[in-house]
Length: 345
Image (spheres, rainbow, N blue to C red):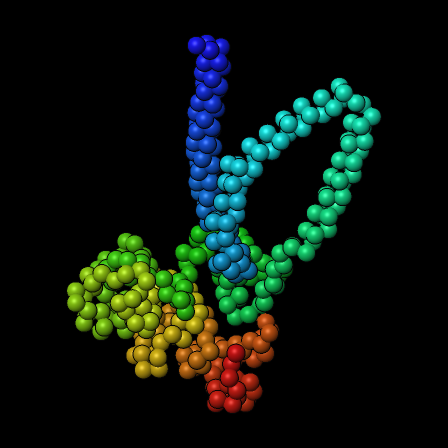
């Protein structure tokens, strides 16, 4: 009964089923492509970002960098998975519609084409003008104390002038060789999950246990390490939640000591250590400085009083230079800072 109707219904059902199946495969393929592209982009970003100079990370906040890895890449994924197919579909629709319009009424087709061109031109002009309001601005980096050490390490490339390292222009020295000859102790300590011994050995991977222990004794870290449950084999976590800030800094100093480089840079190395702990490590710091060139950046002036040369910086300029005794005798800015008349900022 009603064979033609049954055939029509069957044909419609087949078309609907084929369309649903095609949509399923289409969505799956687009999702797979989008995720693969997203992973490749993030991998390439990570590899590329490892080649960036320190200046990039100084002038971009952590939030901005993470936004590139998350929001920006996800926006690109949405473009591939949603916007691009819609653009292709819309383009095909416009082409077919334009062809039908040409066939039925040439004059109306011309009017629509002119109006559409005017709308596109106006939209492009508005986009260019509004884009200037969203341009990202970068703050300039000052020539402060830490900037000088970054220049010495070639974390920043010189815009002008020269820095000579043992009489050699640092631009003529390979970065790996230059940085290998320098040890750095920073205010922010980066330890990894592992034993205390392994964290100290990170300064020189081929160092023996005896050399690591000797470096720890030199820095004053041995006394607290030996009191840990497993001593030098105690496992510490990367977030340092089972050590105090002062203890982490002592391990960092021991790590630099085991590397035994000819030049040492200490950037606020004792600022996170209380005065009592500082007194413990001061002798070790003096021993660490012996026989090598050391750049010490501090606000706590008691750390540098034994230095052979002290430079006082203000707004990127050297305003005083000399030994502790000489600068105290001159009764200038260093004298005022040391005696507590002013607070160095």
